[in-house]
Image: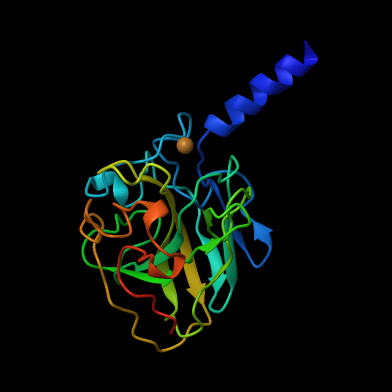
Length: 230
Ligand SMILES: [Cu+2]
């Protein structure tokens, strides 16, 4: 009986999807879920977004967060995941600078304001399956806030794109959230290229509509603009 229960639990776990409710900055996690990270509409269901052109592709939020996290330029960041990130696909991070006179607690992130600071590329595991950094972990891969990022308020957007069903249109799954941050000790870089959400992705982008069984890992093209490293 105990064995059967364990099996059923395991089955439920492999079906479960995930949210990213907690930002970690230089090893220090936000105090509780959704305190500087905006609570997402799938906080309970854990459902991903399948159409990358809908408004929810920006932050998927049900509410703004109350706080703002202080993030030194050059900091290492990642997110804690509610479940194991069990699907193949890239993790990407974006920043958008809050306009002068506005605050990260209220700004909506609209317009061509988002620049990518990190993405991940696949390799092939011992079972000849394509696999990505962070796969099967309970956290997202590390990324660095570029040292040249100008100081000020930003929205930080994390995204994991699950590609196991992506050979069909609008069957890739987007798991994401946005955090409210203030970058301190920043530089004088000019981040870009800038993109809008929605707008940055089309359902037919080669990194979104893709059969992982038919491409080499090095041929995978993460969707969205080029990475700005500062
Ligand atoms: Cu799934």
